[in-house]
Image (cartoon, rainbow, N blue to C red; front, side, top):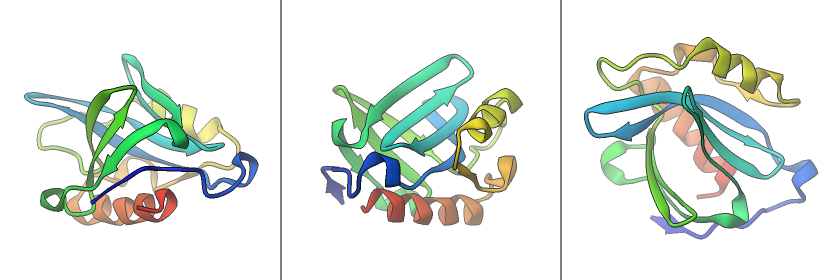
Length: 135
């Protein structure tokens, strides 16, 4: 299922949420934090910000059936990103500084820090993301 995102409410009333996430890149999966704050969707890894865009600028967002609720494809600025909320086998956890940075944003809820790494926890976080992004 693919949808074009538009903000459902003014940005000051938009929900805020952040969870650990992994950017899938074939053999190397990069840990980071996926966050929604003030109507902006952002993925940050230890190498920097992968994308930071208002919801209206997100071109495509899909939760492919083969990932269950724990994986998504996000297209921003013409670039497609594959993101999972379940820690891939052998991948590192997001750096503590990334998790601390997401905590410093006012109003951002965190989903039990780095414990979002099992399949069930990743699917639970994915259901929250689907609700927040109205997919």
